[in-house]
Image 1 (cartoon, rainbow, N blue to C red):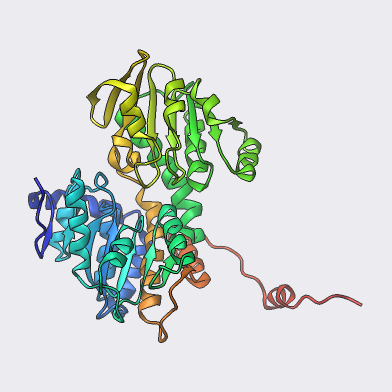
Image 2 (image 1 turned 120 degrees about the horizontal axis):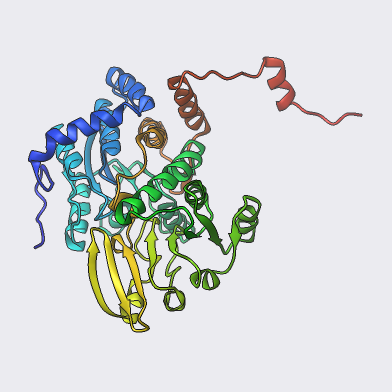
Amino acid sequence: MKRRPVSHGDVKDRSLAPQGKLRIEWASREMPVLQLLKERFTRRKPLEGARISACLHITTETANLALVLKAGGADLALCASNPLSTQDDAAAAILEHGIPVYAIKGEDSDTYYSHIRAALAHKPHITIDDGADLVTALHKTKGAINADVIGGMEETTTGIVRLRSMAKNGKLKYPIIAVNDAETKHFFDNRYGTGQSTVDGITRATNILWAGKKVVVCGYGWCGRGIAMRARGMGAQVIVAEVSPVRALEAVMDGYQIMPLLKAARIGDVFITITGGLSIIDKPHLQSMKDGAILANSGHFNVEISIPALEKLSIKKRAIRPFVDEYSLKNGRRLYLLADGRLINLAAAEGHPASVMDMSFANQALCAEYMFNLKKRMPAAVYPVPKRIDQEVGRLKLRSMGISIDKLTRQQGQYLESWELGT
C-alpha cells in the first residue's frame, strides 16, 4: 500500500526512537570532527534561516550530521536516498529531535519518490544529495528552482557523474559542490568505508568463508580498491575486471589478477559490482557462471547486475535467507543475488563505519556553511570542495586522534611558491 507522507515526517515506528537514540550516541563517539563542528555551530549559528533538504542514507551517522546542521540554525528535512538503506530506529530518533524524516526501510518505489517530494516541499535553499535523486526531482518540478535555491552538495560518485552530465548539457540550474571528490572523502570513505562495509554486508547476508574464495571485483576506482584490499585481507583470491587501462595497470601492480569479466565469470565464486554503470554483469556473464555463484552490488543504483536478464534465464526464484534470493537457471545452475542488487553494505549491514563518515559529513556541514554565507551566488556548475575546507577536515581529524604533523617554514613556503629559472 502506498504511504502518504505527512507534514512531520513518515517513519516506520516512532516507538523505535529510544533504541535509535542510543545507537546515534554510540556513533557520535567515532565522529569527533562533527562534534567539534557542533560546538562551533551551536555558538555561532552559521545556518540561521537556511532551509535544507537532504536525501541521504538514513543511518545513525546521518543523524549526527542532521543534529550538527540543526545546531547551526538550519531548518532541515530528510528523506532516504535508497529504499533499503534506512535504519528505522535512527529515522524515528531523528524525528524525535523535531527534524522531519521521510524514510522507511523497504519502501516501494511510489513511496520512495513521494518521500523525495515531501522533502522538496520544504522549499530548500540548499540540497544535500547522495545519488542526485533529490536534485533530479527538483529540476523536474516546474517552478521549483527559483532565486531561493542557493546551491547543493553531492555525496557520491554516481551522483557526480549525473550532475556533470547535466552541467555539460546545460541542464544544471544551480551550483553543486562535489563533496564526493574531496580528498578527505574519497581517500577514506570510498576506500576504507566501502571496502569494510561491503565485505561486512556480504558476510552478514551469506555467512561465507572468504578465505580461498575467488572474488571478482568489477571496477577499480576508489571503492573498488577498498573492496579488493579488504577481500584479500580476508584471504580471498581477488580478480579485478576493468575497462580503464590505467586502473587495470594499477590493479596489476597492486598484485591482483586482471582479466575480462566474461573470462572471470567462469571461475568466480563472488562477484561485486562497484562501477556506477549499467548492466556490468549481463546475460553472457550470468550464463557462464558456475553453480552457487554469489552476486552483490555496492554501486549506488541497482542496475549494475542485470536483474531482467537474470529473471529471463531463470525458471524459479526463492528467498533462501534475508537478503539472499536463489535463482535456478534453465541450465540447472543456481545463482544467488543479494539485496535485490541494491547497496549490499547498507541493505544487509550498517553502511560505513562512523569514523570515516565523520570526515565526509564534516565536509557536508562546512560546505553548507560556505555556500549559505557566500555574498555572491555561484553560477550553475559542479565545483570542487574548497581546499581550505578539505584541509581543515583533515587537520581536525588528526587533532581528534592526538596526532600532530610538521608545518612548512616561511622560507620553505616561499621557495615552493616562487621558483624561477636560473641563469
